[in-house]
Amino acid sequence: MSLTSPNRGYPLERLEGNAGSMSWWSGAFGRVAGSLGDLRTSVQAATDLDGVGASIRAARSDAQEVAGALAAEIAEAELLSGVLQRYADAYSSSAEAANRLIDDIESAHASWTTASAEANEAGLRALWTSRSGEPADVRRTNEAAQDAMATRDAAASDLADLWEQFETHYSAWDTAYDAALAELAGGAGPAMTAASRSLLDQLLAADTPQEVLELWLAHPELHDEIAGAHPDIIGNLDGIPYDVRGQVNRERLEALRATQPDGALGEDVAALWEELTDGPPFPLLISFDPNGSTQTTAALAYGDLASATDINVLVPGMNSTVAGIGEWGDSARALNNAGPGLATIAWFGYDSPNEIEEPGMDRALDGAAALRSFLLGVDAVHPTAEKAVIAHSYGSTTAALAIGSRPDALGVDQFIAVGSAGFPSDAQVLSNLQNAEGLQMYATLSENDAWARIGRDTSFGGAHGTVPETLPGVIEFGSDGGYAADGEHLAPTPGHAAHEGGNSPLPSGDGEGYLVEGSESFYNIQQIILTGEPGTEMDGEGSEGGFWDLPDWLRWLPVDPYRTGL
Image (cartoon, rainbow, N blue to C red; front, side, top):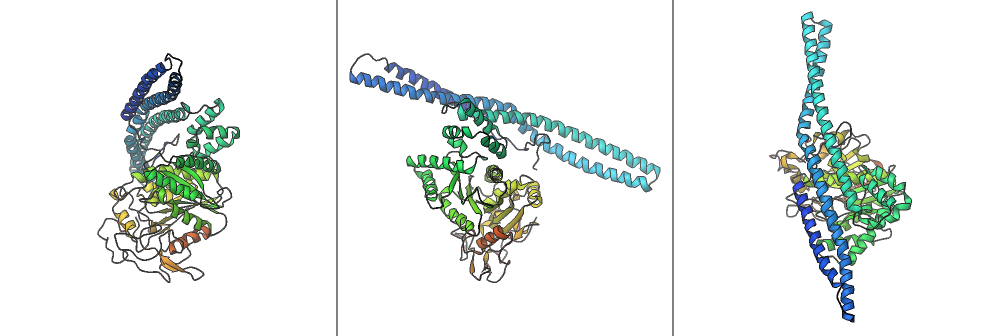
């Protein structure tokens, strides 16, 4: 159930955290600060060494330098210790109290919904009876209606009381969270003027990307100072214009590349740098966080976002990492080449699941929150552009959860799911997706795609077992081969892959992935973006059958992954 509080619009969702763990870390940083303080005291003593020789002078100079460096480290540790403990206390007193109310609110909301329906039915019965019933029946139905309305009003009052408590606790937590972010951002970092410090605090406390944009544009004289002091914040804050973010993040990436990182991070940095230097035109690195998640997160924008009339966002799925961003860049450039005024973003903004994690919703829940903010940022900075989200595999699960989180669909005009691992089976999310004004959904599933079908049928409790191709209002398009309007042959998608590969080790067909230029799937996506309609007919001329379409080998599973809706 997706509910929001009636007065402040707070989402009824669990506020994640662990006060005990945060307090432990606060103590740990305090101990680090203490140990560094003892070390600094010892080092400081070396600055008082007697003697006049060159070696003595060098030792005193080195000791002074080390002592000065330790001072900054001590301040940082003390800051972390203090912020963590203050936030832990606020979390314990406010967030945990809000979390404890969630079940009660959901139960009270259900009771109020039932009572409201019963009151409406009782009122209609009373109205009907008053027109043609006996006096005793009229009296009886009127009393029943009054009783039902009293029950409804009592349920509404109980629900309102719970919401008021929730909003009080949530507001206190939200204030503490904003304060912690602001303190961490500036406490022990580079010196800033009071005006810049104040603006940064306001940016971090803003509730929406639109508010961030308005604050940023109102103070151009402070941009260089804030971006220079905290590029990691400005480079990833939704609502900041993308040319600013692109410049800041490129400099951050270049500095990190100079350290020659190894392992997965080194591969990610190399892949991003290769894309940034592949041009012209060169893409913009509009988000970049090598440390905030299990995986490096990043987003590259291809084309001129500022002048684009259509902005597309590509969302990858299972087992995707920044190291593979190159082939997504190829898809982005090919989309842009389909017509004028197009710009495309390859969004790697969440920790994608592996095969073990895919049946669950944890990765989608975390990713949807990040994608929701990102899409709101795109809509705030470029409100007049048409927006399309093109999501593959588990990325479509994540995107559906994000876009369906609000009735306005986050400003998205077209949602295109390819090889979907299944949409969330949350009734409110599906209702928002199907009823959002201006949103049109599209979906395709290759007849050779095994993993998408398996993903839908193995989701825990059917959590993302909803089949998008047959949801009311969804336009299904082909990915099994065909012919373009100019007669060019279009390849079928051989399996589940967005680019290269099939269903290994399961059987696959021959052809191109869903997002490879020259495939029927990609041709249809280009036509949808340009015209709003697929370019080929479903199962039309040139379409090929697939191993996983016949026989219907998963019929015994609880969800039919082929042509069955809810």
